Length: 212
Length: 272
Image (cartoon, rainbow over all chains, first blue to last red; front, top):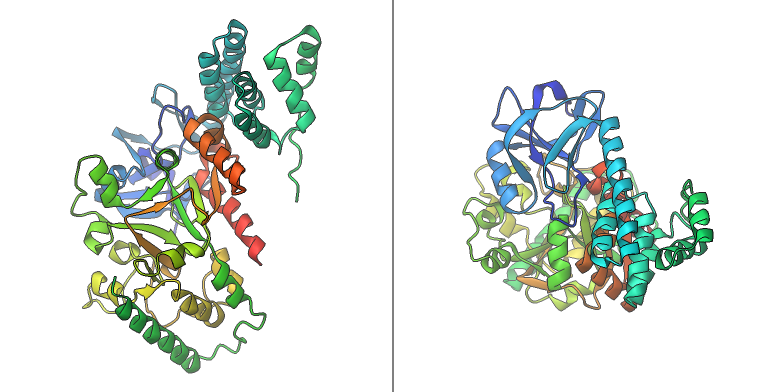
């Protein structure tokens, strides 16, 4: 196995993805460059562990532009130092954030929660477009949350897009029983106090084990 | 494509592998379970791409070559680009394996029947052609990567004969090829360096490949993208209607490629 690279010796010049407006916010894998030799860059896939980058693919800096032109990576205008246990993520205005993992997780969780609340309010107002957009933001920020899928399924049901509703049900299936998901969708289609109580009870629902 | 030249290459490569196996006995029986034969016949063609490209593929319904994509944007490919230098910029690329192209987040698997449809214009090599330029080390530095590539181009689907032989002769178990484990013998081709793409079969089909076809076996995309992107949603809906497997996966903390690879490998393992 090749020697790992120390994160302290690296800077970040971009990330290994190209995002569009339906993909943000999103955690992204950094593209690194050696501080001491800016002609050498490191690409994922790699493993980050205890301040080191393992098994990265080293490419000459000149190849980064080729990868950018092939829509494989995004390059920043400048570079900034890499840090141990930090996460790189891109917000919905395409601004990058590089912060400790726990802070990034908190921030993305907050964005997801606020987007769900916004989507619920938009649904109540009958602003389907905004509800669709915000539920998308929520699921990008945290794809473990089930509410955005239920909101999207509810919108599909309102539009009589049965294939779309079925797909959302499929996506939720590994984490939530069909019955519970249907109740969430019904709630978003026409909430009542009883259903509100049910939703509060389901807030801590745990993922189901995937079928073998 | 010169099919006669490719057939001649295939004959030489198979003979070379037989000679290599005789000269370098491993002591391990070659494919006692018959798994190499089954797997080499049934392995899917894998094409993975960035999420942004996947959206475009879902919308257009085609996988397209780099040159066609550049032309559609009204610009030429940079002359230093790997595919341009290798003369492969007019091709759509597949691996005969699970997804192995790094930094990709979504992908498609096609049945081997796609090769039959393109037996007159497609071809295969027993390695990733792009790797010849910067990633692998060639056995003879006097030979150009382009010449080396031309010597190893084989017809499709007949290249699977060489795949079966190499799975049986070079790997401890045929499944190791699929799992991405190194062969226990390097084989006669002589490439060194790089990763598993050094011995993964690549299939090239000219210009473009229709996605919504009977050859499509499975589609893979991150759950968040599938739920949010209307083009991917429509495409997955089409898959559901046609009985094509469509798999949306969670991507913990942005590790899309690793999750895509693992999800695809789990799917392909159903073949053995």
